[in-house]
Image 1 (cartoon, rainbow, N blue to C red):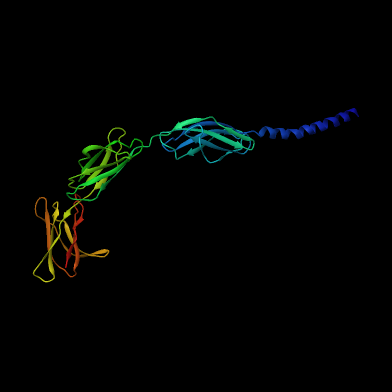
Image 2 (cartoon, rainbow, N blue to C red):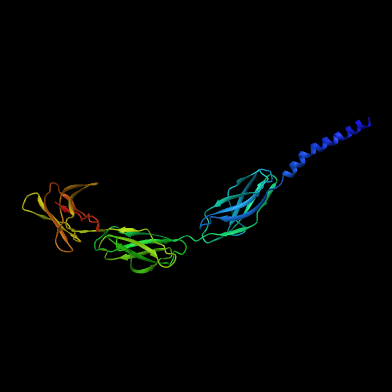
Length: 318
């Protein structure tokens, strides 16, 4: 009887202990996450990847990074899941839209139902914006004998008041690039303009920075269009006129097409070829039957690669 009473007294205690155990485990698991701010990588002039260590302590946990130019931060990454495990995991997020050559502060923050945790402050510095150069010939092509400009812009960190120099490699593009004139300074916004007088044939052009870092623009081919004069002279035959003109520089053998200009199109009205006249000038001439009055022009088709084709100014045939 005494043994039975002892067993009956122990049983409620065991039951109470068994009922209390799950509650204590849940209490132990219900802890705020643990975090540690880790390093950064892939830092450019406008972006970086930030790392942090997060232990969710068994509860569904989210995390984010705070970042900014001071320890007040001011910006943060989107909320992202960190899981519900009990082991520390390394997590990361990318930040973009940053300022170049700037010191940034950042830290990781994690949140779950039991509370939040904040990592310690760390820093990284963004890189400079790499210099780059873009250029264009204005106009392109340029008529033989006319001046033109090589205009462009230097962009990136240090683009203002930076020396740049124009280089040319004339047709047939075998001599290599050589400086043209003196270097110039870019303006406060990185812009520059090189005047070019006396380009005799098509040329490859580029602009190069002076000093380090050496940055080279893409190559632009500046075309030199032949200069064409165009005239009309009456003949003794009714309805026939002589169309004639000159081409500079001399392009003997080039084809000439006479065109009647119509709204939105041109109509071929015959042609001829260019004949030698001197070392610097060639000519063309042909008597044609004018069936329609109106504006005419001559198209000189150049195919030797040293110059580009060009139209004459139009003339009115009444």
